[in-house]
Length: 174
Image 1 (cartoon, rainbow, N blue to C red):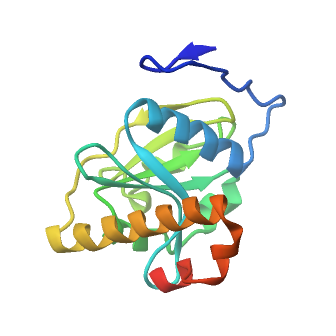
Image 2: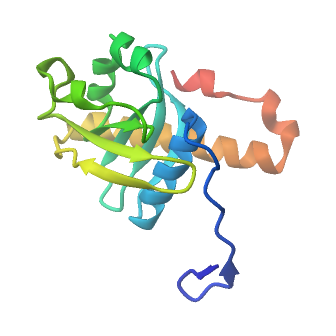
Image 3: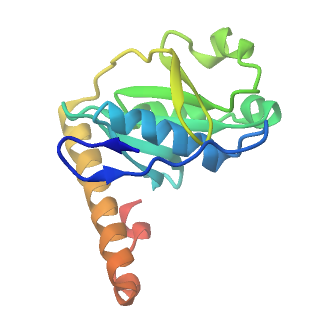
């Protein structure tokens, strides 16, 4: 258990048992790392053009972070559209399972000067290589922050009142 800035005690979740992490486990660990650093993210965020960011978040300064999660070598090497995410964020990270060989991320095809690397499991994550801040144009950031806010609010309202699922939708965000 831990105390959260004067709040009541919050029970922490136990690590996932076993050696193989799922994408959900990796997302959970990265989300915890981000939350401790005041970065709040949304899973499966739709982007314009029909793509979805595995995690898209915003930090306290308004910078947008996208994480593309990979848990298998085949998925990592087979993804040819990931560079499309770079137009929608100030920082881009690869989010990897602990057992995944990440040596290929040093190759020029993976833009190591542009992309950070996170390694996570169901309990936590660590920054292996920080992502540089490459700021988006202000107009683009304004649009993306609004889209992220609307998606977050819609999900929160839908969770509280499932009847609202029939109105609007994340499809309207793309």
